[in-house]
Image 1 (spheres, chains in turn green, purple):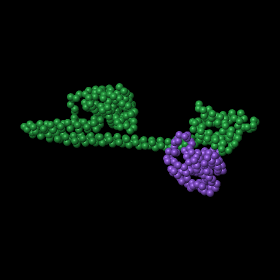
Image 2 (tube, chains in turn purple, green; image 1 turned 90 degrees about the vertical axis):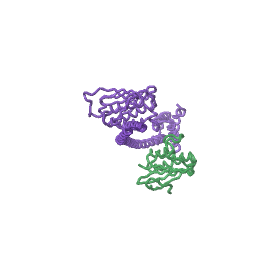
Image 3 (spheres, helix red, strand yellow; image 1 turned 45 degrees about the horizontal axis):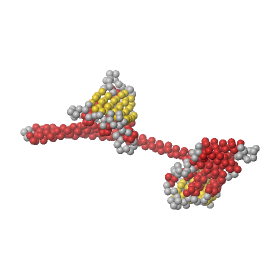
Image 4 (cartoon, one colour; image 1 turned 120 degrees about the vertical axis):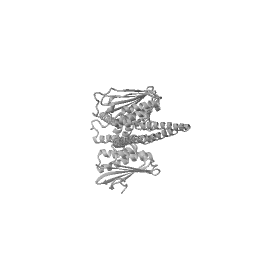
Length: 362
Length: 148
């Protein structure tokens, strides 16, 4: 206990005695200053009330507050004025808090409104982005792809006509190779923008194809453990999961220096879980998810996608054992409940094979 | 004698009889201002609790004058507005003024003061509160408390 707080009962009794002897403005001001000092020292209302009662009990019993033994107890109205005076700084603080809380509630409501607005906006942005990707993908494939095929045919005919002219034929052959590489690039790009497979064959096929291509491109060995409940996903959920997987695998390639990555699906019939893990370098999740950081590994975008389909998103990065990203989604109701003869969980292991030819057909 | 004008944002308040002016130059003047404020508030019909809060508000604005401007004055003025009576309190000085009024009104702005004291404390004790200040010219606090 500090010196001032041990001496406070004495001070309180002294000021009260002074006031009862001379109940005027000067002594009331002393009472007010006492309350002010008590509050500044961190005392609460309970302590003041205790001090007051203590001073009364001791003072009255000891005859200090009511001079002349046998005289009646101090005037109640005076005691009330004194206590109110001591407590008035506390009253001011209390009113201030009440006003501040009102203001905070107002700000909170405003914040919640803004938050809703932002979420709606981000949903719109993601939807628009997906639309745009679909459109560009289609354009690439249908327009540019078809044009390149036509050029290819023309070049093949040129090559035929050039029979006999060896150097010309060689140059046409070079152009043909260049063309083949361009077609490959266009199709790979179109597929990455919007895998047609996702729309036509579902998430499982789209992921398997994506992993095959990924392994081929990066040399990172991948494994996919699917689940029959994947067939129950609607297009919004499939799309969200595919995009998250795509983004996560890109992160593994760019940042993790991992040799292997895997995607595991599990389901209890109501909730579908997707887990993407790698054996590479870890990172600080908090740092990457923080606001205003430069490179956030697209984690915010992934989290937002999953939030929009009502799922949860968790990420764990442990030094020495890589990163694990978990998504949980509620499966759509009833529709497409697992058929009785559903296939068991399938497993695909994809090992890098740079010699393998890439299938160009969409 | 008309000593003060009603706070700008309020519906025009009528000035009643009995305004007083108390110069604030020393601690003892705070006692005088409180005493005059208390008797005016009692005469207007304020409860003991409200009278105490008015005295507390006067204490804080008077102390503010002594702390920052060394001298100034407090005007007390019975008012009437929309059928309600009230007490107007104006504290003014020609001290250095307050450069950042918003900051001065924040809780805990000055480490010397705790919660519920100083100008922010006074603000919570009255119904109307207005602070105007000009650096180098001084500060005026205009407050009013109305009968329920």
